[in-house]
Length: 288
Image (cartoon, rainbow, N blue to C red; front, side, top):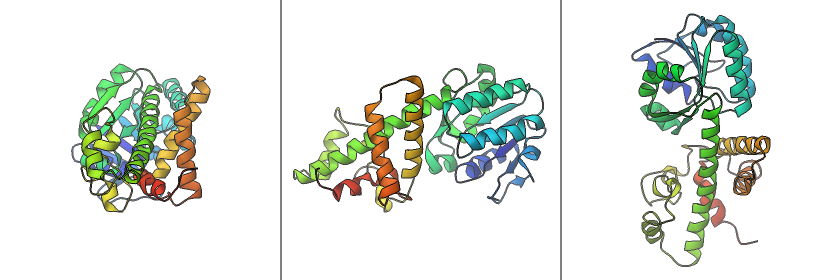
């Protein structure tokens, strides 16, 4: 396929590089100029004549602005595949704009972080037409290990923010539990051995354990250098609460997690650290 790829940051650049091994990829970014990719002078130029235009952008406002630039340049019937994590309303509005321009659109945010983007092991959760999903499935196979069609436009974003709300809540609970175990005199390895095989098991415990030297290697073993930065978790939690407000959904645990990560990122030293660095954050605190 001929592919335009707009947004060549920490996630977009390795995704585009993986595609370029077997497809004709033209990239564009306002700042990044990664090696090994053919680069266009503008987003519209990258989108022109492409069968699929992939966007990987920071937020909904930027996605809307870029969509306004690229949709007029895209050929009729082409697919706009947005892999950004944005609010549901932006995803649905951009899809409607694409349809009005004679295009197809999929919102397909990803899970798996920079490592998944580099290694081609991302998970995609996609919303939009089933035929468009089928057309781009070979691209998902290159960039990731799994892609799930979640229904209509915006449902990919809905799946992502629901998933990451669970992740934010469970990571906080996991970190709290380790600190409580420490104070009760329970060895961390014993704690892991019990919980990881019992009813308290979770991805936060079993795969991404926030305690250094426990379980599989994780950012905790590298000084909490981010695999998934705390500020990105805060972004996703804020999106979950925006969606909850719009849908009149009661999400008290999601709101509590949002408040804690907001304090950690904006008022403490969490910015630039992995989201699992909540563990040393709780270690340094006392009840009340």
